[in-house]
Image (cartoon, rainbow, N blue to C red; front, side, top):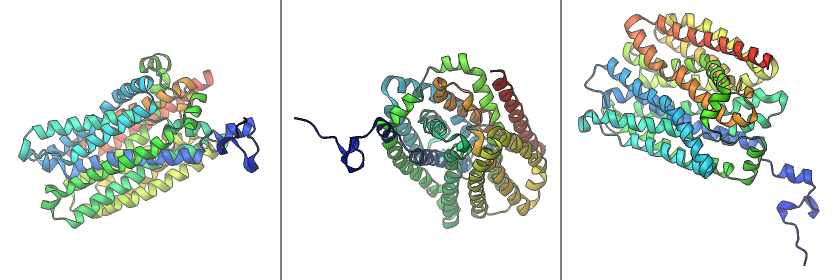
Length: 443
């Protein structure tokens, strides 16, 4: 008795699919991949910015109240940096888990750890309750977030880039980066609402905990949205075809160490600017100005919208002029912008707002292409792990200690050190892009 073809195996009007039609049917559409990328990145960045804003508004008063406000904020920023230190180790650990138990198990475990660490922060005891143990627990939970973020790499951005039409690679590269302004916009809006609606006592007593519970809920939604795509046969098939599989990290560093280093430093201008226009200005205003927290966060929300628009524009620019040229031009603009940083930050409310809004535009234009500019240098076998580890190191070198260094040096020696920090990031980006171009030409 002959069997009938199923709907999945049949073309319209019931005829059997040709081999070409079957192959096209087995492919995940780039649009569907893009949705998964944006959802995943937005949830991660929301977690990221909730902790960053709390490092300024909450932890100095709740965890480090025995210290002066400046020292308490610096200690909060030191804890903030721990996630970036832990992130490469999380990548290595969860790549091993993926090789042994599969991608779905890895992603589930990583996002479970991220959700547990995040909701744990919502239940964090204060210094009045636990003493120095509160700072220890805060540090452990922050490390847990970093390890989980390293393990949450799903390969979707790499797959999206490799499926992009050659003439639209810049456009597809920027889609995953949209998660950053979206996450920041929601985090800032939530804290702005809480600080405007609650008394300072209520906010520091219990109100600050709600953003961490919201982050946990968003993680659960993002987990199911990403697993729905990641565990499908079509997705696995595309990853196998593109050789996007985990390889041992030591093997990657031994054979592709130069590409990892170049990729990390090529994004430095963008990643250094990242925290200088998001977390650092909030800390500076809290310590030196009379501007209201809710009002300042609303200005940053406008900046996030501008950054999202600039990220979209970066895709057009990169497709027209090339991603490397776009990043080189923006590194020069960030270097020029760094020269105005002390004047703007020290210029009162108007100057500070202008610093942020211009900075957000430059951030969007540069960050939109920062991830995809040099990962194409990796051979297919090493691109999956190479892209993850390159991003980890770029965050560690360029962004992890930016709020700590910028605030500490500015408070003690003046705002000129913010200029030097941004200028050094721009110089590293230009040098790395030159090295990448030279290496590509030699190869």
